[in-house]
Length: 102
Image (tube, rainbow, N blue to C red; front, side, top):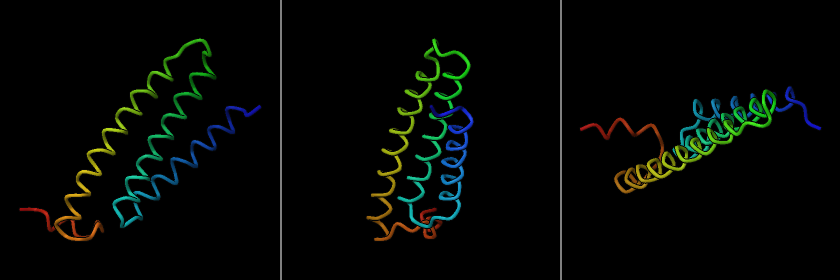
């Protein structure tokens, strides 16, 4: 049986990897994947604490459904922006985004 402490260590590692990816990646797809890792870390956190504190409630799972909906919307908007950036610059590196100001 996995304990709450072990799950929170895994959660912390997921969050740290996501933050590291957001701060160090130059590629937009890598940044979007890192943000998804952060969202998944939050989902795991909600489920772990709900199951640890009151296993009969479903509030953690309800929050996870909202987070999944927000993550899907974020991915759709992010990919739409990514396609427009690629069409304009033929590159998806984040260094060139300041050229989009008009």
